Length: 336
Image (cartoon, one colour):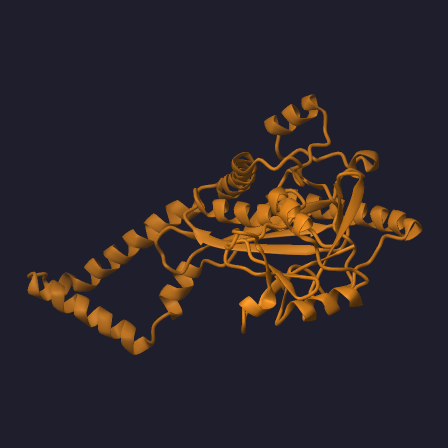
């Protein structure tokens, strides 16, 4: 795995240099935060190396308690064995045998190969499962397979074989993913897994979860889906025969304001405006995973002229005066 990881890093550095040379001539747009705009469609390298990190279980076993606490537990164990009639002359040998048995079991469980393969495969399956359940019309996150089918079959037979880095093929790649895993401090067989995703636009994403090996990647797969599939600000979509640009708020995403008037002024400062009732409804019907914004229940949405969109009060109309909601906070995003 170390050889594969070194090869992946070498290819990543070479490919980054080529992409940067291309971007310097095209003038890639840069956001306010200093990172380039995220591509609408992400192609991630399908091989995801996972490196084993510090064993937190053994670390907490050794340092999770003070020396006096450890001696107290040992004393209680010795007293219990004496009450059971164990010969004191064999006490030390018995304690060593018990300790060696526990360590032997952990060594066997930790030395068997394949945990990295399990985590990488589980992550891919988890991401695909979320997409199958949510079924967004347009998928934003893909695992990129640049090689022909016959080459993929060769790699399966010989996973340690060096990969041919074709610059023409690698142009379709948007990023790479890699991760670490460690046995959790609970010492109950669960893992702490961290996944890193780096994109050519300069954005980096980090996801972490804890759980049993066969389950932990479900949480990270859900996090990845929500991060890359949710509506990005700014973005554009088509409503009828016109295009609408979603600007978000000064904070970047859906904002909150003490009054509709305050939200309206914020949108004007961004050279935009608050959505109309029809736009709120249409974007809510699109949903968060298809370029829209869901008008969540329990929220009040700011509109122009001190009006409010209240999804929980549809009769006779969800559009109400701000005077009906004293002391409330209002959600909003700007459009243009």
